[in-house]
Length: 164
Length: 173
Image 1: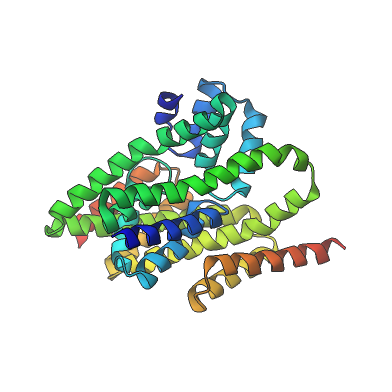
Image 2: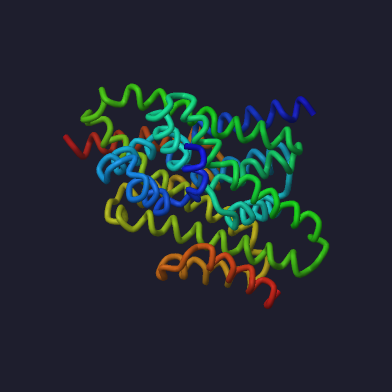
């Protein structure tokens, strides 16, 4: 179980291939349903999904071992990168490398955001919500919990008014 | 030291429970806590750690153990990881047990509809904050724009885009 999940790499398409196509732990619609649930709950989708699949096999023990399996190897790798950086950060080349890397990471995050935006772009609620998120988080520097509560309330009300 | 560990645990437990819409949605709050409130590192260092975490394989919250390690070594790593991944996993365990009852409840789709644009907004705020901290000159701004466009319009594996960014950084800066 642990080993099976160890290689899962974290990215969604890869997880789909392993869980549905190779291991056949779930079929296509079970996978989609489970992903839907995991998206609603707090926490990373893939982490939550590994909890769910682990639970199916071994209960709580399975859930714990699949999460550990999922994050153990990446943690070791990321620490190694960090240690190398710590040792060599006095080198200009290494500093420039990390700066370029950070810029690329920011760019990819923008791209992810815009991709998620595409399917819901038509709704007016989307633009309003995004504008408000920027204002609350960056301008007013409200805590995330408060921002979430306010925006969820606003959106619920708008959706309810629209329906009736 | 104990105090730092307790603070780390509190901060990341809170983030864990609030992480509706996945890890990227809590980056702004994480940065705010780590940089502005507790002064564990600068905004630029936060962006560097985020970059290293993104360059490594695995779930996209690998910045969490890194922050723990940076602040308090191995003990910090353990504390932040457990605090971040534990509570949300426990919620998942319990939520799945009760999920059958809510299967076709209209609340579910309305919650989803209300949450989706907020998640997207938070991801964009995260991108803005990371970009803001890492764009120290025009070349870096250009790399951000270039990688945004590549990520958006080309089907390239993100790792190649990251390598391109690193390469451009070495050559142009």
